[in-house]
Figure 1 (cartoon, rainbow, N blue to C red):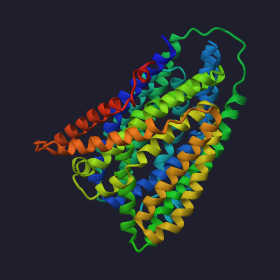
Figure 2 (figure 1 turned 135 degrees about the vertical axis):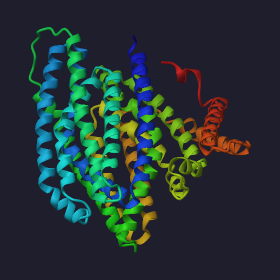
Figure 3 (figure 1 turned 120 degrees about the vertical axis):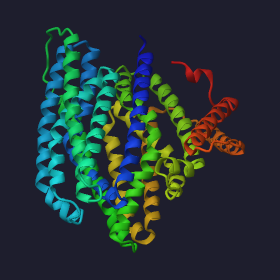
Figure 4 (figure 1 turned 180 degrees about the horizontal axis):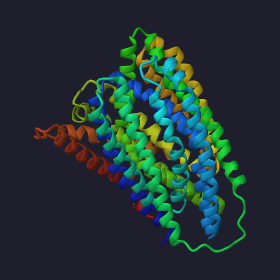
Length: 500
């Protein structure tokens, strides 16, 4: 099987599975937003920002190290070496996971008191700390499955984790009162922790089964610790800075919103609406892009190792074009059907204005994810982290000065400045390194024209569905069909773009 076709098959597997998981995730987020108050949702977002920082401490760099080293050893058919490399990655993961868990456990009371205004009990963080060693080891195992192009394994693990998390959370919601902030957050963290532990158990089981299929030949096996440290440590250090700044950024937002004249409850509610309700809708379609992101790392790493620079440029050009066409289509859908989307998903039109305003972020976010993955595959992961750290410094500065003056719309402006800065610098860095061709007309002008034309035509059609959801689905399908036909008519999509 040609590598391109294998890459396509893995991408299709991840896309389908991610679409299903994304739909489940959005449905679950809707369930959560309806079950708890906006204030509780805002507090939960803050808890998760601290939790994500702890996960960063536990996992940073190890997934990339595992993917890169194991893909190289498999390319050399050194299966014994890949097995030893994974074992050393797991030991590295376990140490980091335990260190991270200890830090979270020790600082839980401080975080609860000073950053969350004593609105939750520290025991929620104690419970969360239990999952960190399991998450860390799972990161190494997932790197292994990515390296050997076993997309089905990764998809299955994610599915099991999410289903168990949802089932456990729903059960805990029925046991504890969701009207109480502590109990609501406890239910969510307990569900997440149990899901993470089961994910580790299932990941290790699949790895054990996979290893039995491989016949290892005795070769001169090197010690991989230096390679692991070379890849993981720089990424980890920059990730710690980035994640720490990101956590400060998230904690600072409601605090600075309060200074604009809002009460603490209103500030947390607005924060919860944008981060917990609006952004998930904007990010949901990115699952179709992100499916290929993890696969791009080993693919471009392989091309870079073999010095296939012309093919690298060709692939980047094709990927950029697909991403831009897809992203601009999503912007059109979000902007045109914002009212219907919020009614169908959350049964309220109150947040549709934010969806319309923030819809252009889709292009920036999706492009940034793709560019970051390509840069990591080209061994420029430090450049990625450097851009992210710069972005966070700028964002924190704007949050500090803008939010007390402009309130929630100041926060919206900061999001745009952050994403525009991050994406622009990343693209500039990639262009300088690879010299790929930038086609403004086919990547932006024609798709934008097609989006405007599609929106205009769809609104002319009298659609008689009384059910809001059925009407919305029909309108989106019609929009996409017209959009694709416009792209074909303007020669934006050509036959050669579809070749593998």
